[in-house]
Structure formats: structure tokens, C-alpha cells
Image 1 (cartoon, rainbow, N blue to C red):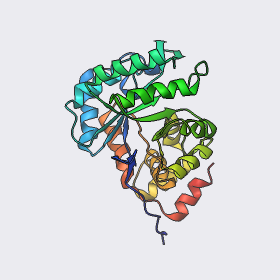
Image 2 (cartoon, helix red, strand yellow):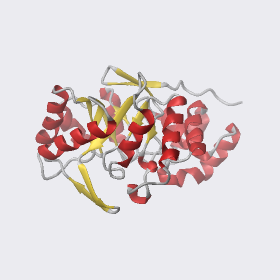
Image 3 (tube, one colour):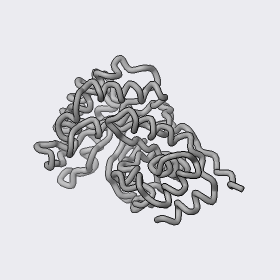
Length: 285
């Protein structure tokens, strides 16, 4: 007899005012290899984005350097005017000069210019969630977050998030400003950010794990495959379902450029794992 699973919370509220479904959509895969240039026909990307929203996605996560600029432009082309309740999150703080060149730039004037450019591309007056893509070690944290605070006071940013930080850095950031989300690498096999996750739980901060499928590794994992067979599901769906079961603040935003894979990812929200299955998956770490 299959044991009952614990209840899975379907939504999380960002900053106490933006309720979103926990399984969202990330746009990195709408661009080419290395998140550089276009992936293919723009119409295909537009179709994927529109289908994601049709399926109930209420959190779309993008970044100015995906393309660069391409992903944000596709989001606007597909979804503007944005339906009520759809939260658009984007990121700034990293400059791309080639498919393998990433340059962190947290200078106040740069962050302000990046945010202004994202507003134009996304056709927004306010970005619901603006995330610092990387902390710049050459610029004091207070200056970087202070700039985002200024943009929030001006009404150009609704809420602030951080990408790729330690628990210690998040704690320091919380001394300076309100942070409603973080993004770090985290999945069934890679739990190095567990201390950060615990801190997010303590403060009610959403955790948007990147590479939630282990960059494809988990789609063929034998334990995931075995449990998937019992549910008539795919291994990748089990990996996403585990995230939704593991912590109420985890909000995976898996990305894809195909409609078939999108449907598969979003169907993971319907998978309910038993306590014994969760124990087996927990043990993989």
C-alpha cells in the first residue's frame, strides 16, 4: 500500500503581495547554445511562452543577458499586454560579450542602465521582481542593493531578488534591504545550497532553483525512472515533483524551447509522491 504524501503547497506569495504558482517558466532555453543568440524561429518561442501562461504559469523568469536581450524581447512579443496576475521577473548585473564571456558589473550606474533597458524591452513601467544576477565583489554590497532600493522607491522595481549567493551573503543583504527571492543551483542531486534554503524558509523568501533538472542529468536517473514508472510519469517530472514536496519556498522555473517538453514539465505539478518515495529520493543526496 502506497503511503500518503505530505500536502504540497501550490502557491507562494512574493513580498507579501504577489501570489504565484510554484512551478513557473524560465526563458534561458529560448536562446541559443550558451544562452547566446536565437534558438530558432521566434514564432516557436512565442508559442511556448503563450502556452505556459495558458497552462496556468504565473511566474516567468528571464534575464537581460539571455541572448543578450533576446529572451526579454520574446517575453514582450508573446505576452504583452500582460494578463492580470502574471509576474515577470528579470535579472541584471551581468554583461555578455560572447557566448562564453560573462562579466559581472554591479556599479550603480550600470545597474540603473540595465534596469531601464529591461523596462523598455519588456514594455513595462515596473518590473515585479528584479534580481541581481551576481554580486559584484568589486562593489560594496550596500551600493549594489542601494541602487536597487532607489529603483524600487522610484516605482521601477517592485521587489528585489538575489542570484547565486551564500546563506551568509543573504543574511548580510537582509540587514540592508528586503529580499523576496533567491536563485541558486539546487536539485535532487546537488544540495550544496541547503543552508541557504533553510534561511529562506525562516524568512519566507522564495527560492528559485536553477538547473532544477540537473542540466538534464536527472531526466535519466535510475531511481527517478523507477519511481516515475509507478506514476506513469517521466523521470524529470519526479525530479521537479521532489522539489515541490521538499520545501514550500522552492519555486522551480524549468526552461524549454519545445511545447512537448513544456507540457511534460508543467504536468509534474500533478505528481504526488508518497512518503516512502520521498525518503528514497531524499537519500540520493
